[in-house]
Length: 524
Image (cartoon, rainbow, N blue to C red; front, side, top):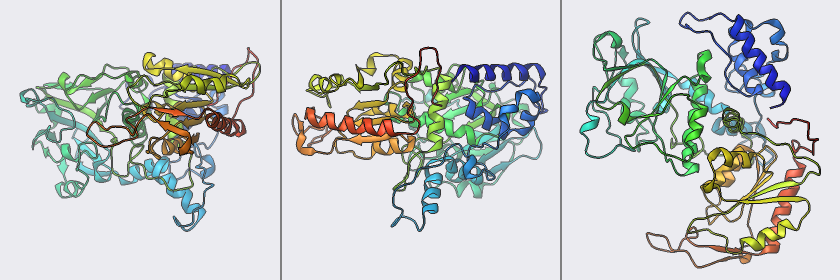
């Protein structure tokens, strides 16, 4: 972010704090602008015009635009956060180029958010403002409720720890004082094949309480902060854990009915009793300023939530990130780009503009694992270091803090690495960058598709006669497997592919030229 943009954001926050009076009856505190990148902040204010209207006129000069995210029905394609890029042939997939773009938009972009919003249906209706409520999107992928009670008194009695369990609750252990449409709720139970596909395993136990929850005397603990309950995929695998973070981010938009939608004064409760530990735990700081809870922190109690969100899940059928079906010929999801910018901004990851002669900054991810090591790594890197147009660094991310990892990724033009979860870093590359998946180990679509979604270039090894596996690979459960061995690569072919990636990077419309040491630049 440029110095001018930073000052503008600080001024807007200061003016709002000084002059804005609460516009909503339930808001007791002075509202301040959320900590968002400038392009995001403009769209946030356009989402809440009453809030924007209370800003001083001199503060809204550059905010006078029709910019929108893309999930709004009145958002024109020109005003969207980003338009998908669909140069590929649509023949055989859909009947027109327009249909190709629309298909991608609703599969993997803000169109998916629009579908969730359109599907939101009341499952339990309140009669009075103090009553409970529950509404969900189709198949119970996303739900939110008010004044709900979750009875966790049986959790300490379990012999095993809870993770991926579908029987955490029993009938009557999720309660609300509202009119439940059980027929409608039961009709949405199709996607409960696993715990991470739907909130059905929990909501099938919903029942009605005869008295208002907060007046019933049944609450051992009342949680006043808005709470996101998360069923997470995996904590040590970056690819799978970022399925969790991405769907949490997408859920902020589905839940965006109040100016506090991007507030960090929220509670996150992880739906398991294992202690939460992850090398990527700092990512939660982008969403919440409060300590994380697990079920162990609230077990044995009847917990009443004033506002609770059951966010989109990491392994939904035709979901986002992990199970996203992507139509051929399209790339560049605005939702994925927005997520990248949001995380980098909230975690304050610096961007360093290139100085002097513009060399391409190449980062090579060196593996320290048992398998998928590159046995002639030094020979390959020597090919690059001899090129005066390249600035090369070899790193082992497992030895660095996650913030330091992101700082390197954000300032890389080309990221090179073997197939593995570390390539998920492609999400945080600059818009013009390229991922070189050195070898996909016979899993060709995983990071190729993720690169398409993020909108960065992608190349991989194609000449199978120029890659030399150490052996056939031995899967722990038996049989040959390409992911369970180490490799050598032809150095000349390696250099050729890097040159190909370099050409793509330099040709990108956003690729920055060298700047003077006193200038500031931010590609977002």
